[in-house]
Amino acid sequence: MGIPVFLAELRELVGHRPLWLSGVGVVPVDEDGRVLLGRRADNGEWSLVGGIVDPGEQPADAAVRECLEETGVTVLPEALTSVTVSPVIEYPNGDHAQYLELTFRCRPLAGEARVNDDESLEVGWFHPDALPELDASARKRIELALAGNSTAYFELGEA
View 1: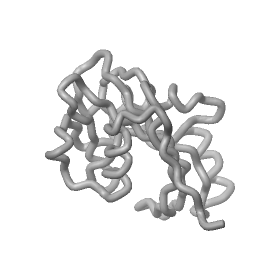
View 2 (view 1 turned 90 degrees about the horizontal axis):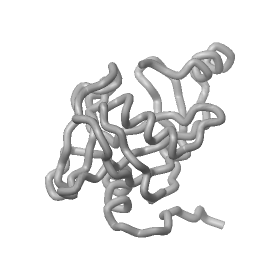
View 3 (view 1 turned 60 degrees about the vertical axis):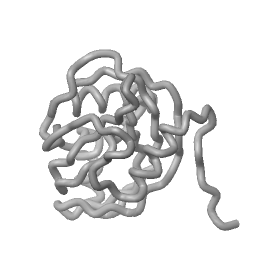
View 4 (view 1 turned 90 degrees about the vertical axis):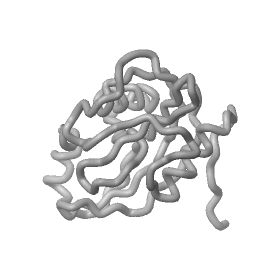
């Protein structure tokens, strides 16, 4: 899939400088309580399904789109479970970005989980007690999504 057209055009202007972007994380939870994850093609690490919110796109729509694009699974967002900020990320091509991360707990509606684009090496359903190696942020976002709270988690910075 590559990067969205709007981002490629922006990168032509700003080069590799850090960009502030909105992103969605998707935590699909099936009827057995398993979570759908993807192993990224760019770094080989397991992570939440997700991606960049396109200009003018509703974040919940972006969650549905990203999950379908990456895994072939259609989901219904049920709750916004956390609002966080990523660290600055440096991509293999030298681009830098930092994300406002909007994480949604979703219910799968249709489709069989499979690698559905070039952004993933593999996808799979995992029981929460048998997750693959994940960074601390992804683990926290999954924990919050599985908690079943109706109020989103957020952090307050130092005042």
